[in-house]
Amino acid sequence: MSRQAVLDRLDEGIVLIDPLGKIVEVNHVSIEIFHRLFQVENYLVEVIDQHVNQFFREVQPLIDAIENNQMTKLSYHRANMYYDIHVTRLGNRLDDLFLVVWKDVTDKTLYEKRLQEMAIKDPLTKLSNRRAFIDKYNKRDKDAEYTFLLLDIDYFKHFNDRYGHFIGDKVLQQVADLIRQHFPRKRCRSNTTWWRRIRRFY
Image 1 (cartoon, rainbow, N blue to C red):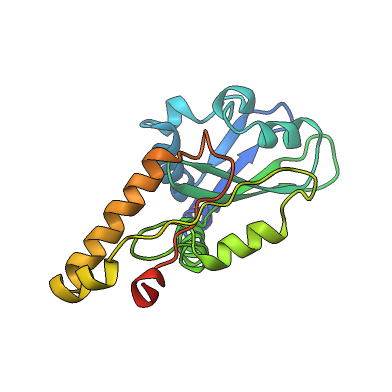
Image 2 (spheres, rainbow, N blue to C red):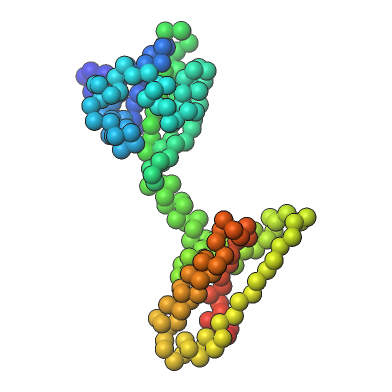
């Protein structure tokens, strides 16, 4: 079995780079990755013999690792696609190749982000929850000034009982939209927090 056939059987993207920084070999998975990331169509023309400074110009840490002869691990993401990249030198001679392995961790990363969001965001309003508020409060700069705003929806329990929880949820979502509109993140440094518990207590 040829080396190329072995490389094409791997699940990770494999790139071999010569000591001059030119790409000399890639496997099928890496071509799929580069097509998604860099719109590569013809790997023989657009990848093979290309210099890393040009081809990976958007991945500067990878270029730095090659130029500095460093074995390293780094992360790269673009348009909701996430990759772990490992850079290794195959041997210790000056004419040895660099092995660059691209591993797609998109599903794992998005799942972790979703879990993180579920832990700090209210599922209905998508605003930060009580846990996120307390965490941010505990990490606040003790010397800085803060303003806390407590909002109450008048007669919300009466409205909720009369029209039902489905309509009540719509009201909460509308209020959340108003909060985002009037307290945008770029103008308000604080973490706007909404407690759905208001439905049970008011």
